[in-house]
Figure 1 (tube, rainbow, N blue to C red):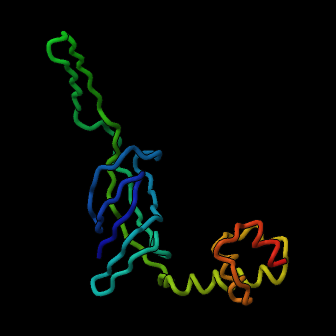
Figure 2 (figure 1 turned 90 degrees about the vertical axis):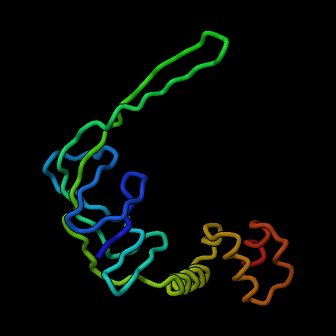
Figure 3 (figure 1 turned 135 degrees about the horizontal axis):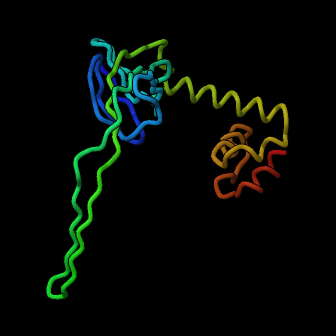
Length: 165
């Protein structure tokens, strides 16, 4: 069982009982942290890919210690000018251990999400005509084409709202 999880802007492939170094996390040593942005999850025979994240799956980890990484030397030089600058820094990192990968439920398919969006757009138009300004241009064009209106492809948002209300 493994998961690809996003931790402080970077993606990591993690497994249970794995130790890894990540950018500094705001948690005390010994505390447990949980990461909800799981991009992909595999339990051995089933693979779930998120859009953008897999719902119902989270990764639990424990902060082992905070430390600094190896020194990175930044050296700049312009030849024949007498210009040399040497700088360096040590990145702040955190060592964590993955305790568990918890899969609570199943992932909704992308088609189901699209159907829910379509239904919510239709009901919102029926309930309040003032909510048309909250919809995107693509949704307004789709509603107009469903009503049988012609020439909606070249209309702007304000024109579509006038035509629909």
